[in-house]
Image (cartoon, rainbow, N blue to C red; front, side, top):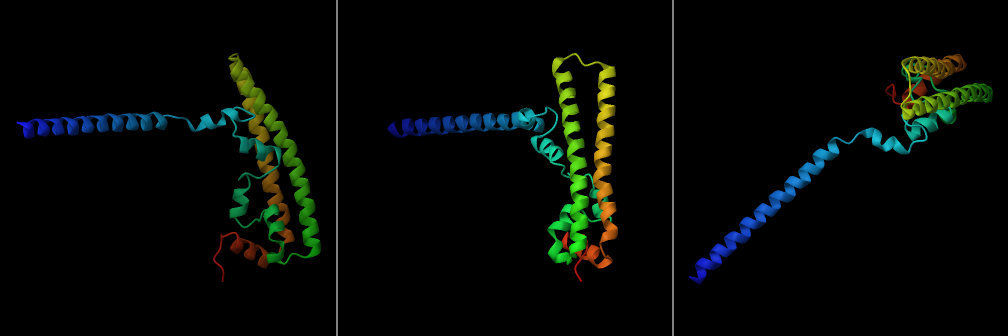
Amino acid sequence: MNKRIITYFLIGIATSLVSVTTVFAQQHQHGEQHNSFRSPYAEQLDSPVQGLSSSEVDNLLNGRGSGYARMAELNGYPGLRHVLDLSSELNLSTQQTEEIEVAFAQMQSQAKSLGQTIVNKEQKLSEAFASGKISDDELKRATNKLSQLYGELRKTHLQAHLNINPLLSVEQIQKYNQLRGYEAEE
C-alpha cells in the first residue's frame, strides 16, 4: 500500500511539474509574441526630433553623407572623406590633397547648413503632429519643402564626388575602388 501511495504521489508531482513547465513556456512564448509587436521606432522616442533617429540627426547636423552619394561611390566616383583617409595608399600629391581638402570643406559647410535647416523643419513637422492640429495644407507644404531640402543635400554630396573625380588619376580611382572593396585587387 505504501508503494502505491508513493507512486501516486510521484505521478502527482511529475504531472504538476509538467503543468508548471507548460505554463511558464506559454508565458515566455506570449512574452516573445508581445515583443514581436514592439515597433523599432520605440527606440526613437528619446531622439531630439521625433521621426528621426538620434544618429540621423547627428549625421544631418555634422554634414555626413549617410549614403546620399552611394550612387556616385558605386559608379567609380570616390568620396572626398574616404579619399582623404586613404591619401597615403592612393599616393595623393600635395596639390591633390589641398584641392580635395578645400572641396571637402565646401561640401561639409553646405551639407551642415542644409542639415541644420532639415532638422529644424523636421522638428516643426513633428511638433505639428504632436499638437494634433496639423492640416492637410500644412502637411503638404512641410513635406514638399523637406523633399526639396533632402534633394539639395543629396545633390551636394553627389556633386562633391563629381567634382573631385577629375583630380584623381585612373590608377588612383582603380586603387580606391580596390581598397573600398568594389573591385578585386590585381
